[in-house]
Image (cartoon, rainbow, N blue to C red; front, top):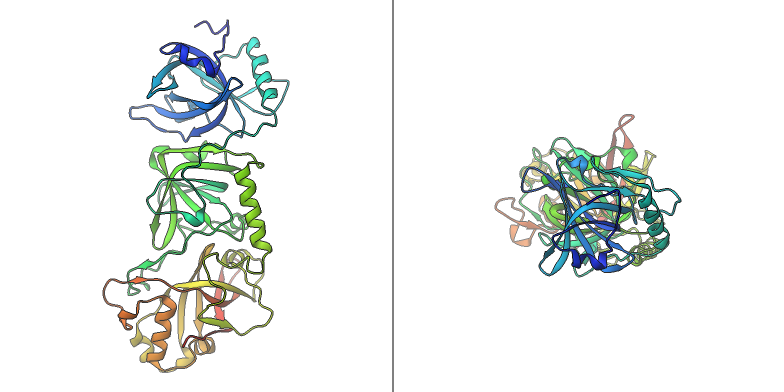
Length: 461
């Protein structure tokens, strides 16, 4: 095709051009993350529309020699101009293939403008003057239009996620980072809801040498990053499949609302983590999208309520503990770890998911109960922390020294099944209950903080 004598084929008419190469101009609604193809190339799949047809969307596979030469869509409503795209019929649907050696593309900002300046193009792309008018026309035509967020048959919130099941998630992307130890990219996303609490497998025998991890990532994020996160609602970590390559250089959705399609969730050490599969896709959403507005509305209703900082899964009328303070205002663990003050106390609703030491013999043989010291691992939907329980606060929490009573209460806090009878032998499944807890923040140096349990008592029978 002579690209100097441009002729665009509208999406509605592409079915008349099967097995032919054409030029197509459209608005990108959805794209797969760049990934390695089955061969030596890289591939990304885009879905687009134009003024002639908004449904079904036109799907095109774009192949390139390197991941850098694939299209990397920046924002909601951006345009793509595809040249010499081969039109195919697959399973009754019209689709396209952009070949690395004979096709080309360019991406343009979707915001109205009198100029048609591309922000990315493939190596062979040439933009001619007559095409610029078409680009500006399509921008004006779709200015202010709310694009479809796509089918929602598998749409879940974080509250409803299921292990090893493919689903879609509308969320805000807060951050992306590379975990060098695990050699993987990770997205940090949020939708204002809480992931379900999980049972914990295994015993606490190895907690001293192999404690439960405090986060999915190998090392915690810097505080200046965490302080930019929302303090209520889970920030879900989503791991990029190895097929996605150097995701961080090309993922442009940080700070934006998106719909992630075909993702899954796994459970590791009692923590949810999402996974981007090779088939996963991204759909930019506007701030005025109906699903986004619903999430905003539900979140705002949540945080202005009396129990807005409580985990959605907790029962505010049934806790095993009480706090010996008046005028209690509950906060999340994310609020505690990102606060800038020290030597202050915070009240929260948490689960004790681990402790060290745990063995009854340690406490039975200790010469002075008031010198007891334990490290508790506290969890809520926003974070995990280690907190120290010692001295008089240890005595206050357990209300006495009798070892059998202490063991029974500790097992209850840890969610040990009754059949264990205090034993740490064998395979067990723990389900720690929600408790009220007071945490005091202390500083041990300029950068590190220690957390202590205080003013908390068990009231179980």
